[in-house]
Length: 381
Image (cartoon, rainbow, N blue to C red):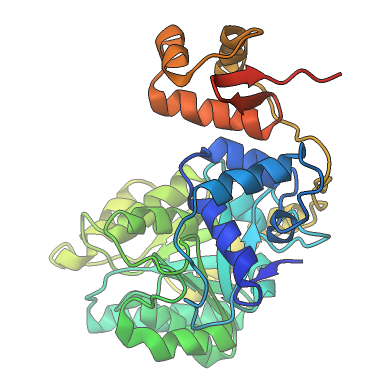
């Protein structure tokens, strides 16, 4: 089952340390998650001193991070990514479409109805300062798509995003807000009541840990996650350049459909939509046309959503680390002796950061042990 935050502060802190530590690179974290690592497993007894989890525990506890507990205003659930599925029991609620992407978030924090994450979804995005017609169109599209059974996904921003969310809520359907902050940092702050309504009739989701405030570089990352969750992205009204164009470009790169509304050449805030149309986006005429055109995508989405759950990690067993070029190179350099970090950097030609992350991967996989003189290869009988 997914891990519920705020029920076990010790598990929360260890898990968030794992997600945020720079001592373990993204590939190593993904390997651990694909093997079935869970927050509960991180709290297991260290009776098996040579287990992968025990080594990970010692690494995290030797480099304590901030205490993340007590930061959530909402009851929140953490889903972690493995082989296109969260690796916790038989839970399949990590979004199937998002899990297909090579740069999918390793973890998602969710407040609200987890089941909505695996419903067919369409993103509705646009300007923070739209025209009156843009607001009306966004609300109408959100309303009709949600009423037809689609999950309406947007970014909780002012303008088009908020209108799309409100339209979906008014229809009685569901909507999902993808945030560029931690769940406890609603942005903009004036959307606190809207966020609460979304939690009651959908969900909030973010890849950012509790306590994370909005930063400029978070939004492009958020936009890729937003488009990755969806079968299609609908751009209501957007200037050029704009965040909505980033989302639409990400959707196209991810192999998803893009729709854009037509605007007058004299409407500056519609220049982004006209550009998308010139690049091959579908013309947005009515919400009914979107629904009609997306009918063919639903069969593929349904087949993807039927994937089997991933395997589990044996908490007391050895990890399964795939050895890449760097791992093999460092193992050859280590040979049968103890070698310190400076020597490994010098002889490998790698940077200090690359050597540290690679040695950490080898240590977590049980191939290398740290000694008073540096590092030594672990010999297994």
